[in-house]
Length: 381
Image (cartoon, rainbow, N blue to C red; front, side, top):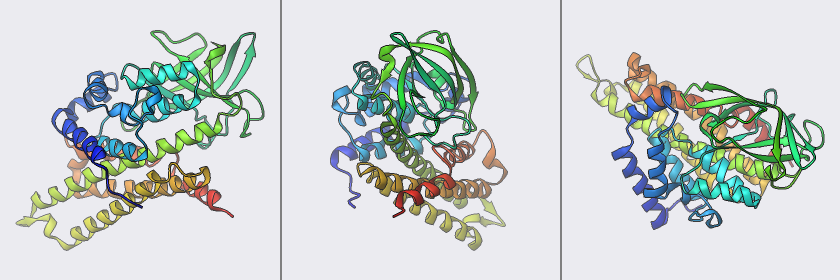
């Protein structure tokens, strides 16, 4: 595998890193996450207009630069290092990239709006009791003349409270756990919540805005159906794997920051007249953190560079990476907080915010146990 970035990818990374270092204020972003709207629209516009970061990972058909997995890795790792709260993975990876693949005119138009930085989207697919399985869909969509009527519920849909559009998986045929019969529907939220949709807002442990959604006789137009009727699961699985690989890269960026801050703190913090970093026991601890980080980076590369492979190989690589990242995120996050002492969990210190994000990443897009089981199933001969 070749891990060398092209000159264009290096420019993308350097430009984004420089922008985030100069203009992305952690205190302001945390305030927006905890007390504000959950994101910073002016930053999102700058991503689109000044940096071209949003379009870098989208196909030319929707106004993007036709970037692939490597560009996705470059962008998401930089976003993780800066602890960016703006919904890049939800809107670009689970949103615009999925919409573009459907080939549906309305979906492509929305993807173009996302590429231009003028719209946000959220994917509503996970349900209570599904164990995170994309093929476990109890939400139903039934024909009613020239329209569709949706019934059911979706759990913890991140970015739903700030989204302009929802992409919803619903069953148009078959039983609740059949692979066939799953379709995708595009719902415009606009300024008011549509009749038949109930939004129960919540905030996750890492201060992101999310919602549980309930559909009660929600009527949508015929063109709300995007993609093949009853055959949307492969599209969903590809988007989900890409998003999982993206959150793996984001976690690597966050862990790089946490590790470097911990090493720097150990050099400065004095105890018994010398830096705590000079104590052999703590040196061993930081070496273990470094080993976990390097294993995570290797898993990240494996997942990213296998996204274009066949579905079984892609699933195995992504699940192996997510299981590795889940372990590394817990180990590095917990040890970083412990080495910082009580101040590691304060609001004033960045390490506590990174720790909460890494804790959320451990379970986002599936737990380590779920991905180990998926890896075993994908590699079974």
